[in-house]
Image (tube, rainbow, N blue to C red):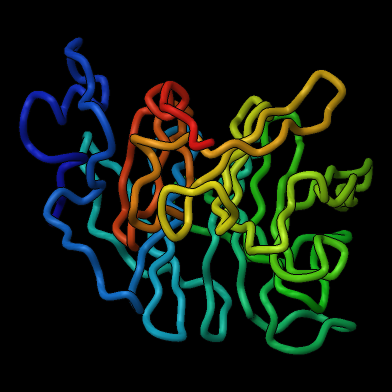
Length: 290
């Protein structure tokens, strides 16, 4: 069975560039007929491959979390299918590496020595056009005995990742930056303490050009319980003070789990656990919350 990319109707089709009419104003559902899910079964962190042919998102089921994939054929998306990747009970936070096209994801799968426990770590896997290869943990300094929940890589190789290791902010989850060395191992460039807040900062995604990132946070000022925030990379490589872009992205509901389309023109996110999408330029033209 196939499902349409978006709901029937000229406006919906235009949202994907099928005609020249203006896209709808404000967010629309990724799955047109979907209802707001139970609080223990949210979906979030939808990511799309650089060629726009694969979509992957996280769906929770109580204390478990799993990744679901969709593939596009002849303009239509397949039904979501649970992915068969290494994990015990938590498989989440997928993001396509914009530099090499591989898929990064967080899993509580057993790690090789000297790692122990059942915490989340970042792994990678590649798609050969027909199937997924053998998944393996990232090499280098990213994975620790703490939880690493998501990693996003721009075309220039800049990685933004999330961890609750103490160096982030000492309280909860925060953002870090990393790059690969000549041997291919990931080395931490810095902990983004100028961006991190004592409250949770998670679900980070960096744009393909590496100049803007989005993440969700419980910090203030906010429109709802949790909002999606953004920051831009400055000329010296540091990041600007985070800004809440406000409506139409954020609302009185809980917004979290940002992700980007393959062409970078659409921002995916979750509103109270329901997958949504909005043109990125509408987000950037919103009225920031002060």
